[in-house]
Amino acid sequence: MSVRVLHLFERPEFIPDVARWIHHEFWEGKQGHSPKSMAARLREAVDGTQIPLSLVAIADGQPVGTVNLVENDDENRIHLHPWLAALFVIPEYRRRGIGSRLVREIQQQAARLEIKLMYLGTDNAKFYARLGATTHEQVSPHFQIMKMNALRQQLRTSRLFLRRWLAADREPFAQMSADARVMEFFPSTYSPEETDAVIARIQAHFDARGFGLWAVEIPGVAPFAGFVGLSTPRFEAHFTPCVEIGWRLAAQHWGQGYATEAARAALAFGFETLGLREIVALTAPDNRRSRRVMEKLGMTHNPADDFDHPFFSEEHRLRPHVLYRIARPATSNPGPLPAS
Image (cartoon, rainbow, N blue to C red; front, side, top):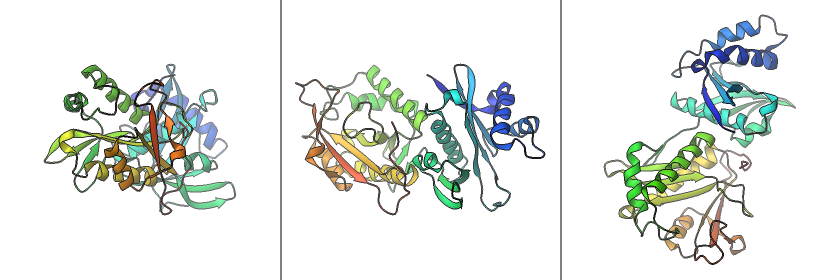
């Protein structure tokens, strides 16, 4: 199933449906509210550059869900702003990850507006906790105000800029992917077509989950040096579902601490923004260079975790793999492991 998430103003013909959902789910029976008045409020979201924002999920050519970012959603807490509000998915499309996708999209929109934190009221705290939200105020035994970070699409360290991929990254990525040194622990070097497919998967992962493998830029040195970031493995093993940290840099940038520096920023993002409980890393046993980075990051290896990678045949030299783990520091944002 293909799901697209757009600004509602881009599909104004869906406003009556979305207004009806929100009124029925959140406002029905409250004086002064109607589907018509809700539609008028939704039409106030005229572009994507300011609050209010209204997003719609579209599947099979029809609207199936919505989420909003508003200045205030609680008249008793006007000092808190902005708010994630009116998250809704129609019943027949629930339990397909659309609600999580909408939340991640609104987090990204908030980050683009340079919003760092947003609030929400919910009786389903477990759902939002899985996405990294934390309790701000326990209003009643079954209802709480939660807070959630905006989902940044870029990270900065003292020397590096981690960002979404650009069209200009394709050529240098193809060059490093054709380097036998870089690809020593892969089945082979990649063709330009194969590198394009890798980039497409990375971009799709960002779009679906709100995080991924960032392109690494070294300002003043290299506009593209490789990638570092977080991803979800595409195979099943004893440790999945999980989130994996990985890196791959062009050979001319090895030995300068760039991978470790970028990976520390990615770990912080995973624990503090995504609320992950654990992050793993994996590689072939002989890949001492990557294993040293894992150890510098404080990741630990238990031989009992080692496994055979299902993407390789039984006879392949790269089938045996080692697994490293790192748990969320006690001071970071709590949240259970995300489902795959």
